[in-house]
Image (cartoon, rainbow, N blue to C red; front, side, top):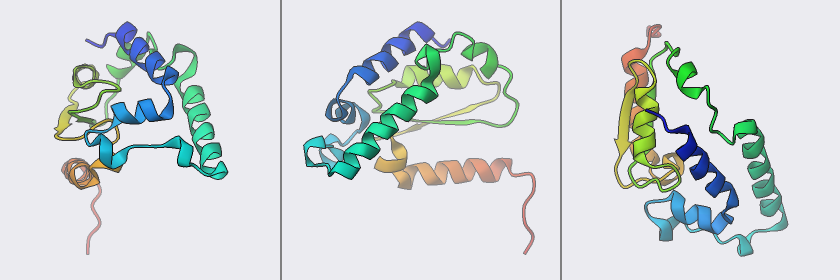
Length: 144
């Protein structure tokens, strides 16, 4: 079961963290991906601020803890893959499992030695999982 109050606390905490603090929670290999905002150019600072503002807009009035989420997820009908980093300290694997469980027939895939951003940290793990899932559920395949 998705604990929306718990997730709300996690998300609220994420918005209160500095970029460096959030980065430290986002990666399995923190040293390899450490972010030092003091080294950002003015352009990079502007992009980071715009990204943060966009995420706050995206998360909406519930700070991503929408009380209707579970009900809406139960209505999802297409095949769903929920890929989650085992080292995610922004939103832990228990939440990922609950999220997948709320979607009928969803597949939950844990990505070892991966944090919150597998597309950055371990794309070599993520891409094959997504590709295999997409191939398994493809309905219109091109013919050669």
